[in-house]
Image (cartoon, rainbow, N blue to C red):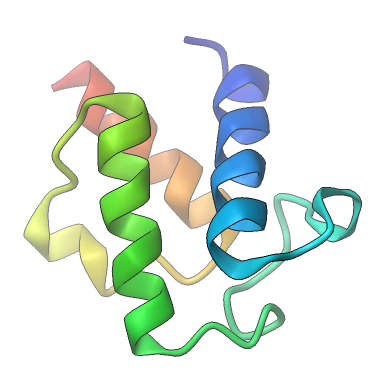
Length: 80
């Protein structure tokens, strides 16, 4: 799956989970920018795993702080 396709799906998930306007989300958007607390982040990771049918590596979870980080983690999980 191409990075642009992953980005589009990640934006859809983030906008659904956090109730955000998808037009306000870029790869550089951090979860802090979105006011996502730890519970929100857990919900996002679970939603990403469901959407992409992957399991994100435990050691990567704490380093997912932005949309770009999420895309990188999903790409790495798909390649594994």
